Length: 91
Image (cartoon, rainbow, N blue to C red; front, side):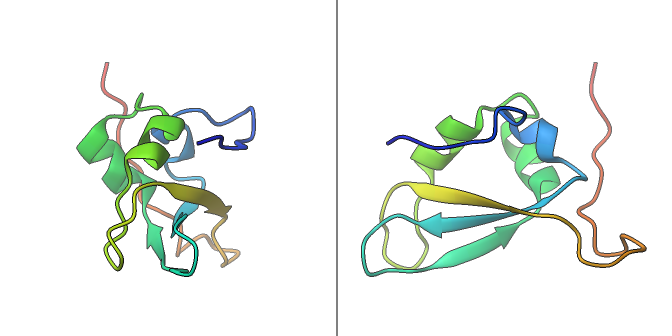
């Protein structure tokens, strides 16, 4: 599955505290999408986990289909009170 990702973002860690992630099922007719905090994904998969690998391994909770598309959403409020949480970098 080919993903058109911005060149600047290749790993989950690069998205932490910058964006919310929307993952959408690729199965035709499903249309299910889920908003995710990249910090939660970084906790689970690691900050260096490749986005292309994550998208290929996603499984839809509605239809069970494999694979997802990615949409990045910046925080909506000027004070950034709705920004995704930050995860400290591990050395």
